Length: 293
Image (cartoon, rainbow, N blue to C red):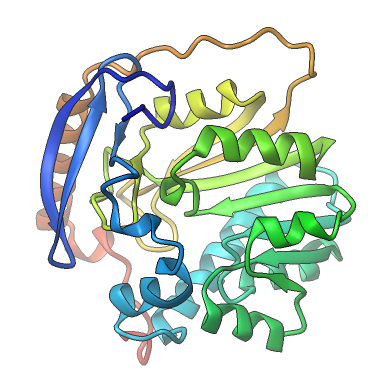
C-alpha cells in the first residue's frame, strides 16, 4: 500500500472508525503525514459506487434533496465571489468535475457567460443537470475521448478527497485538459475542523497536505482560504484553493512532511466542540424552512 500523496510504503494506523456502519481504517504516511484509506480496502473504489450507491447511502435517496440543492446553490455563489475577488480572467470555457446537479456550472454561466461542461458519475444527478441544458459526461475518460478544447477553469469541489490517485488525476488535468493560462479551483473538507472520516473519503486533507499535492502536481497556489460557508461562520470546515499550472520546466517538488497532525486534529475538534457549546446559533447556520431533508 502506497501513500496517495508521496507514494511511500511506510505508514501506521492513525484511526479506526465506522461510517454508515462500515468499518474504516485510516493510515498516516510516515514520510509526508497524509491521512488516508487504502484504496484496496475502501468500499468507495468500486466502479458502481458513485453511479448507484453513493447518494443512497449518504442521503437515503438517489435523487437530489432540498437540503443538498440549497447547499450547492449557496456554495456556488460563495465560490464565484472568491473568483471575482481574486480577479481572474472570466473563463470562456469551464469544466466542473463532480458537477452534481450542475448548479455551480449554471452560476459560472450567469457570472462569466462561460461555455460549461460537467462530469458527474451519479446517474440521477447527471440527469438533473442535463435537464438544465448542461452538457454532461459520466466520467473524465468519456470526456477526453471526444478530445475537447482545453478549459480556462477546472473546478473540483469536494472531489479530491474521493480520489484513489489524486496526484495522477491532477497531473492529467494539467497535461490534457487545462490551458497553460487556466486556473484550477479546489475545495475539500478541512481535517482540523471537519469530521472528515467518511466511507467515501479516501484522503483527509490538512492545509499543508492540500497545498503539497497541488505543488507536487505542478501547480502554484495563489489563493488559499479556510472557511465554513455556507454552513458556519465560526468553524473553518473547508479549504478552498485556486492554483495555476507552473511552467513545464519548473523544478520537481520534494514533498515536505506535515507535522503534529494528530495534535492539531485534537485541538481543532476541541475548539469545534467548544464553539458548538457556547455559540450554538453561530456554529451551524440554520437551513431555511423546508430544506431540512
